[in-house]
Length: 209
Image 1 (cartoon, rainbow, N blue to C red):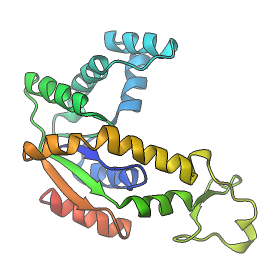
Image 2 (tube, one colour):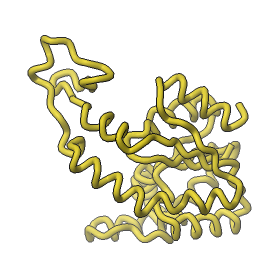
Image 3 (tube, helix red, strand yellow):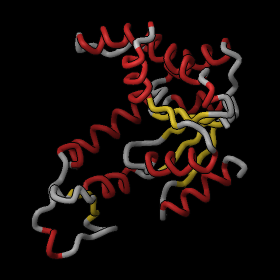
């Protein structure tokens, strides 16, 4: 199964990706991990990416796409893969599509986990971390016991202002890839509201499992 996982920040992609790759027996390929691995391995593309990152620049799309094609050509990805965190823009989606076609790789599905913005804001702004145990609680959905409540902290990027900025970026830059894949007949929309188990069941059904 060759899948791209898409969804707004706070939609539960991380939780669902971990469950799906285990269930399907395919590697989870995130662009961050892919970049670090290529740099560490010293591949030609890794050296190029390292140069951009050391200069504080964004790694160009062409380099990232080259790495993605290189990564999915490895033995563990022959039965399939899940690409997460890329493409993030319509031009990236178009360029990746061309590169995959040239490599003879056909996607099976692009899975979109849908959650309303207002619920995402509630999910993210309610998160609190215990600095001692690193356990993450949610003030509404998973309240902390009284004895630890006083020491919990909120991450800087979990504030409402930061959350809405990330959502604005998602709607402006990433959401345009949705009609691109819809036109290709690859898009699978999945309701991301409910328990993780319920969402996993919907995802599995959407993929024909």
